Amino acid sequence: RRGLEGRVVISATVSADGRPRQVWIQETSGIEMLDHAARKAIEKWRFSPAYHHGLAVDSNVVIPVVFRLEN
Image (cartoon, rainbow, N blue to C red):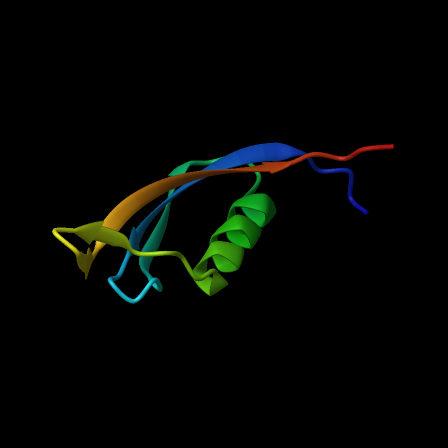
């Protein structure tokens, strides 16, 4: 509705159970509303955990989130 577009890069630590443990903005879009929306959305995501020697382990991921308006 507000015509805002941008790209936010989010970093997250994902626990062995697939839940985001820490989520932070690695690269801001310059628009606080978009940064906040991206962070809040990823905090609700569930991931497939990383595995090391057959055991689920904590890991780090980087997620670009693009807000783009289309016709």
